[in-house]
Image 1 (cartoon, helix red, strand yellow):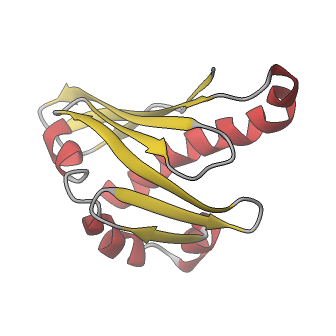
Image 2 (cartoon, rainbow, N blue to C red):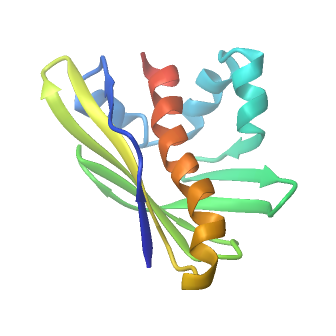
Length: 139
């Protein structure tokens, strides 16, 4: 398994508030609609259900990230349902103080060693981008 850890991002909300956003993912849909058009274009086609995020890309098709576990208020873990590579993504939340927290994502992917130099930079970019997106959604 290869692991890619995103950049840590400080969000100006209590850790519990960020964790609560993952109790029902459909709340993210309204917040995503408020993002600038250029940010939405970068994110591509995304559909959200209560417990999953479905991303549609021309390269891979439809990939569903479904919630695997929730550890209140520290972590939310997702697994891929229909992906060419088994992937687990976690959103890690650590309080900084009572009004802010540090958030970062981590991706664990089962990819052959030979493909890591080709796919690894894209996965690192995805891990970094997830934290940046959370910052835009919640700050």
